Length: 186
Length: 371
Image 1: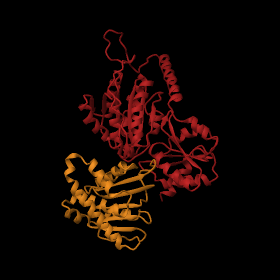
Image 2: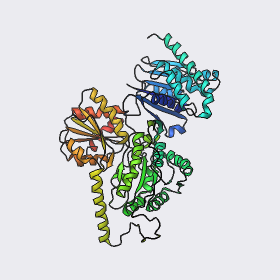
Image 3: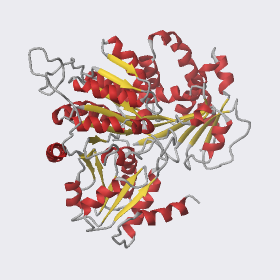
Image 4: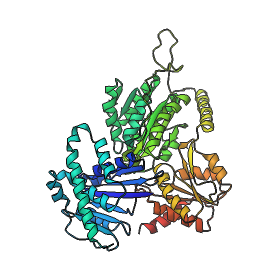
C-alpha cells in the first residue's frame, strides 16, 4: 500500500501543519511516511505546499507528479493541481477562496466552505483542520481517530487547550464531505 | 529510542550532539540553516561550543584549529558555502586530522538556487581543494540514514585521521520522516597521540600541512594513500534492491537513488528485470560490486541530480563491458519516478552501444523532453 496526499495553499493557511498531523498519524499507526514541504522562493511569493507519502514499505520518491489526493486551499493551488491529480483521484477544495467549479469529470471534487466553517468553529485558523477532516472522509488513508490521537500526542503542551476546537473542526469537515459524497452518484 | 518524526537538518544536528560533538562552527545558508539553529540552542545548553563565524572561510579554519586539539568538531554548509571551505579542507587533509563536514547540496553552479541538487559530487569525491587527498564521503537518502551516517562519520574520521563528508541535498534536509536517534554519548576526550592538547610534561607536538622539502611531502602523500587503501578495503557501503536476477542495473545515490527505487519497482511490475544499486559511501566507491554486476548485467543506467558526475566512477568500474547510460536533472530539479521509468524502458528495449560519453545522447533527449 502506498498513498500520497498533496496539500497546497497560501502561507498562513496551515498547509504544512495539516500535512504534519497526517504524517504523525501515519507514523503512530506503524506506517512509513515522508513529509516534504516546498521551501523554495515560491514560499516567499505566498504559496506553500507539502507532500505526504504513506506506505507499508521503504518509501522511494518523496515527491509525486500525479497524486491521488489533493487539498487545495486557494485558487492558484486548485488551478495547478486540478490538472495533476490522478484519474479517479480526489480534490478537496476550499470554496471560500475558489470561485469556480472543477473542469475535469474524471475526479471526485469535494467543495468545502472552509473559511466560514473554521470561523463557525471559533477560529479561522482552524481551516486546515476542517479541510483535513473533509479529506479523511473522501480519501480514507487514515482513520479519523488516529489523526485525532496524533494531534493530541504531538501538539505542544501550550497548545493542548486548542484540542477540542481542532477536533470539532475536523469532525465538521468530515461530516460536510461525507454528506456531499452521499449526494454524488458513485 | 522510539521513532520520532524528524526533519533531516534537525536530525543531523541532534545526531552529531549525541555522538559527542564538542564544538560546532558554521555560517547560515539555505537549505541547511536549521542545522545551525538547532546547534545554536542545544550546544550552549549542554555547555559545548557553538560559534556562528563571520564566514565559511572563518568557520572551516575554526574547525581546523579545534580538530587539532582532538575534540569532536564539525561544520555544515550548502554548496556555495562549501566551496568557500575547500582551502581549509585541503589543509585539514594535509594535516591528517579528523573532521566531519555536511553539505546539504543545492542547485548550482554559482549562487544557483536553494533547490535540492547533487552537483557537488565531484567537489566532495574527486577533490574540491588543492593537492592529492581522499576524504570519506557518505550519501544518505533518508532521514534515518542522515542520522546514522553523521554518527558513523565521527568514528570513521577518527579511525583514519581524515575528513568525513556527508553529502545530503535540500530535500533530505527539509524532509520529515520517522527516525530513531541514537542514545546520548558522553563527550569523551581521547588523548590522541597526535593531538596538540597541551604539552605539559611531554614533548611538544606540531600539526601542520607544510612540508617544505618535496621529498617529505611525497612521503606524506604516499602515507595518506596507504591509509586510503585501508579505507577502500574496509569501508565500502551500499544498498542493493532487486539485483539478484537483474538484467539491467540502475545506479543512483541519495535522493536520486530513492526516486529511482520507485521507478525500479514499477518496472518490475511490468516484467522488466531491473535492480538498483544505491552507493552509501560514494568515496570509497563500490567499484568491486559494480565490476561483478557488469559481468552479468546487459546495461547500466546512472541517475543523478547533476550533469553526470558519479557516471565516471560507474564507467570506471564497468570497464566498457556493457553500455552505461545516463539520466540527469541538474540545476536543482528533482526527477519524478516516471522519467526514470521511461529511461529504464528505453534501456531495456534498445540495442545500445558502449560509448565513452553517454551524456551527448542524453543531452539530445533532454532538449526534446523539455520542449
